[in-house]
Image (cartoon, one colour):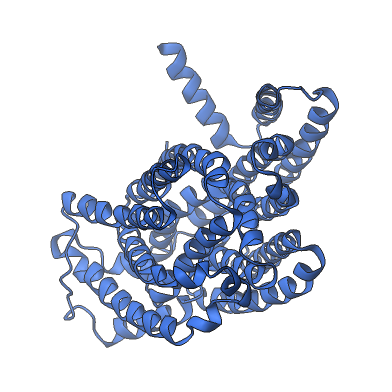
Length: 493
């Protein structure tokens, strides 16, 4: 089993452990513990900190494609981590100045009515700082082929700590202001644990080797950073702009409903996110050695593997969507079709595999930045058009449409420039099989009075029907090999 498959499986496993914790938090405790407005506040703070951290790194995360030239364990990789921290610190100082200057513009009139976002606005400063440096340390670890540590801390540890804070306010053992402090601490702790992890591996050194950075390297790094400020930010830009515009047009309460619904849609992206983490490093090395065949192979396998995985998760969510809203308070029912369209958008995003990784690690990385610039305009335009008509569902439609347009441009660019065609008839079979699975489930499985039992029945049916069909139709050799290896281990035991 190759390193990509191994780390993708491990990363996905830990991600879904986090999903279980996150689901308990978001699905049960949080909506019943705090109001929709307060859920909206957490959604805004979380999304804004991710967005601001992405820009505060000043594009240095894009230099990961150049890390193979820094790689030297004996020389602490020529001070790459120290340089990343210096650039990020400068970006954070710039962010803080901009946050102070444009505070009133960020706080919409709807937020001011509730006064919540205004009260907790400055939580964005520590939240952005620690999110930023967690991303720096995680990127460095991934360049050293450790994609698991960051994922465990971000997807599992942080969510577990947040769950503990939510439980405290759920049982009214703490006040909301105290909860917010605990929530902030839960978001900060993973950064310190990431430092401890790197230190334990002997990989944490903040010394910068300026002697290694000659004029040619400096010029390349500056060029990469300039164009990478937007590169790779598409999902964050989409979710942050959508969230901000929902808050601007509809208020914090609707933002809370939108945020809860989006959580179920983004579950679909977890296998893809695990893949991207390790694929970035492998593809960067392949570009360095000009191994185009390896890149084509990864691209082709990533498309069918991620399409099958995304369709399977999307089916599980959508066949059980009515049961999901039986636990949530009635106000959240407005998010039903947010789940559908966000989920559909991420299925499309997953189906195009590692197209973004290929483009951002190639010599044509600048074009991905141009695509991102266009993406911002498309996202804003579609939200302005659709939110007034369809409310939060309109924001979800705009997100799905933006992902479709964005990935279409990436796909066509790679096809034209590198002559890489990742799709086959199996991709069409996977989509048709998913549609068939949904309608067979809808026709054959009657609704049960007990929604927990109903969820279990539908989940088992989709797992067996879709899963066995994928296996026997041999849509993915990697998935089949994984199942066969698992069955062999099980039979040996």
